[in-house]
Image 1 (spheres, helix red, strand yellow):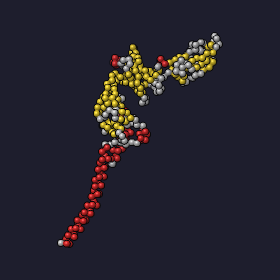
Image 2 (tube, helix red, strand yellow):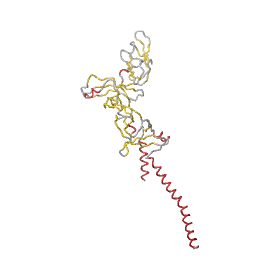
Image 3 (cartoon, one colour):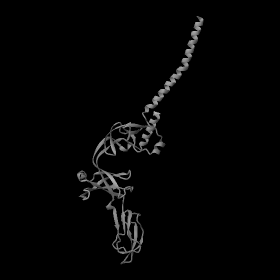
Image 4 (cartoon, one colour):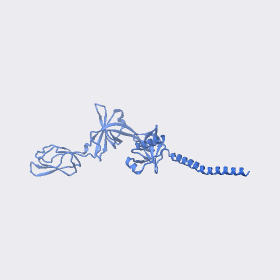
Length: 313
């Protein structure tokens, strides 16, 4: 009996020791597996440092209300604003004694363009600019007679006209004062203007009617002679939740928007309603006041692809 008890006691001690050694390993293994599952609960959230955000050129906007437009798409061309053109002539006939400005020079109102010696009095007087702008024509040289010719042409390009072609079936839809969104046919610039003129005449060649829009050109981005696309606003409807279409990405057939969190960017599936080509109404998936990525959101889409590939491996 004593021998049997000794054997039993030895076996029990061995089992107890094995349990103490093995149990922590099981717990640690299970704990590690749980952390991995918890780490993957983020649903594809993407982390970028402030330096990375700056380097990629990502920009943000805030979700809010806005107008969705019903628009009429048309085409046209940029032209000079004929009300901002000055032809400069001499007050009295005479001989040009000096020329101060050349084509391409910027001038201000009151700048001296040339000096003329009058034929009758032999007195020299100044020819001045009465418009701020750019010299686009110079028709005079030193020693020439002024006669009745325009010596210079000055144009101010701070505003330009946009002449749009309107087909007969659309003429009744357009009114003076309507807002028009102008888009360059050659690059990404866009602008807003208003209808200031509707021609009372039609064009014999293409049966179109000219509609004119006044467009701000303070940055000199709109060059006369270039073609543009335009959307004439016919009506506007207020929507409570509106985002810029530029922000949207398509991922596996789903419309995705990247919402900015505290430390991450969350790819959020959203359902869209009405759209006017620039803005879209959001029916679900987004709340007013949230911040989302607008410019270069494709960078985050690319990061999603990398993460999916890594998890696939």
